[in-house]
Amino acid sequence: MLVYHGGYAPIEEINLEKCRPYTDFGKGFYVTKFKQHAENWAKKVGKHHNSEGFISIFNFIESSFVDYICKKKTFNGYTEEWLDFIVENRNEESTVPLHNFDIVEGPVANDKVQNKLQYYIRGDISKKDFLEDLTYHEETHQVCFCTLASLQTLKYVDRDLTKYIELISENVLNALVKDKKIDVNRASELFYSSKMFKDIADKDTGLYKRDWEEIYKMFLGEIV
Image (cartoon, rainbow, N blue to C red; front, side, top):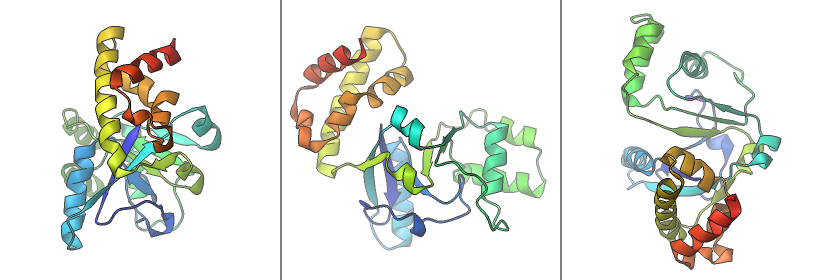
């Protein structure tokens, strides 16, 4: 799966020591599958640092290997468990890590959510009311890579290569949804976790130069 990191400078080598503590999922390197969200964040932090902002792109390799070397936690939506986890990690009075996960994935407590979060922390609104307010909130997404082991699942993608990967991916997913009668989430899960996608994202294979129809045919052969 292609994931995006918005910042005030491009990043190819990740240094966890430079990551901020007391964030949603703890200290770590954050990315999102939503390019627009990363672009918005890049503009915001770029303005603060007198730069235009930059998007760094990575291939997040999700496989049995990841499950073997990493302990991962996934939050499927704005749940009570997600809220408790966010509050604990944002507690600046804590002096020790509050979890031992290598990778944490789930929704973002963005600007709109943070305002309500402060009301909840102060006791101005109940947990039930807080979560009900988020029922129709826009979909958000983030993945936090908390340990050196987790960084083995991320591979930097050359910016010039990205446009080819995104074009191929868009066409393959559309064809997969139509031909297999599945929704786009299931199509994304199949394609982004495949060996084919991993090979496309590897510039040395040269697969990114091929027509998407050829890639799609080879991909179908892989998932039979």
